[in-house]
Length: 560
Image 1: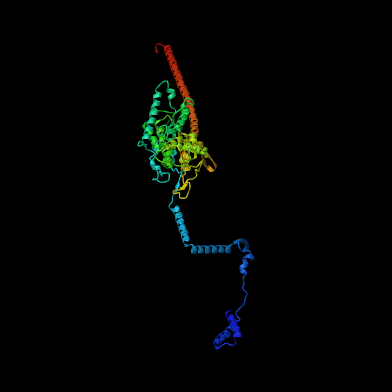
Image 2 (image 1 turned 30 degrees about the horizontal axis):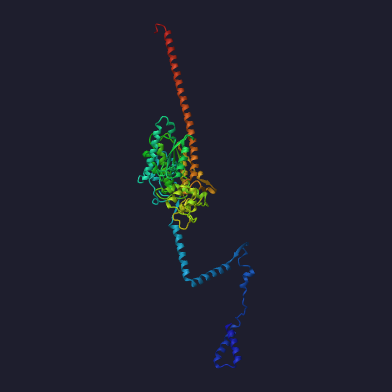
């Protein structure tokens, strides 16, 4: 084709310019020699452009094409052309951006490398923590000597031994470094001394006898209307009057005493029992134990450590009070940790504020006249006076005050999932990085219930249904009007909880009375039967003696 085009140009030049010079003779010779040799081999074919419209005519672009292979009809989607086109377009766009914005591309590449590095670190270096795992079977425990520290797999809730402030659950520990704790412990002993003094009087011996002793930590002390041994506001006074109306009068037939100190763990309660709060003369029929909330929520101990600490207290009471019964209260629902080693006054207000938030979410306080200035604007009271008013009058808390107390943005009626057993140790991009405490509490309650089911003198009381309702797929919903997410009951929560406890105690005391009556009757019957048998045996002996004497009198004289 090249030679043919050159030939045509040469002919045109010859016709236009006339005869050529001698310089063109070589070109003429070349054309005359090459053209005859190539004429037989050149095929002038038209340009075929069907491949541009082949996809349109044969429907091969993004459509299903049927074919037959080995006699079997098959169907496949032919999208190779569209895929290649898309990849080409993407490559062209990336190339253009790389040339037009090199810094932007460099930043994107660095971010991609960092994301890749973070993903590898999250998989290889960020460990997964197992929650709700109790490996040892504590239901086989029969005495305090069966509890061994060597059976603890890990001490801390996060799966290690260093991230918590756990103490040895088998050794009693004092908190004497805190003066308020020492005063609270002294107040409990003085309460028992007053009970002993009242019991010595013959006239009040029946009324002064204590039938149930509540032993525990913050919740128990709140029931008695105190916080660290002192009364600290009208809310605690209301709780004290509520407890007195249910467990300190003859109206319901149950008299009780609350021996608790805020912030105590199981080793602290064990120390108090061994140092004056469980004297030999103090013999209530029932010991009600509420422990574990501070061990888990404040000290962040593992599930095994919490269970072991509670059982250590139970076994100590069983050993020193052989005729008493023990009720182990379940751990209350909790969704967030309690902060600090030392409990603050705001802790017992936590449940109260939770109820206000749950019931008055859109509540706005009406400004009284005494807090307005001459222009009708609100005057801000002093800080101490404002905090005192907020603490003593929770019903009049405004939205700003509630936000000041709730800096953590606590959720209302959160869902609790006991099946959330795994969680990464470091939560980087999650909005809610709270630990799955309910998973651990659920496992602890299951283990305590299993232990109590195999004991004759220990009963398990499950209070979960009071503070949480069961929803779909095994999840629970926390009732914020009854308890806060840190496990502090509200006023209504305490009321419902104490009503349930009172009902349980009345049933247990009634059963004990029936058993005591039955035992007394059986013992009386046995005594009466033994007396009758002794009388019959003595009568028989008298008859035998009389018969023998009569026979001896009838014997011949020579035989005598």
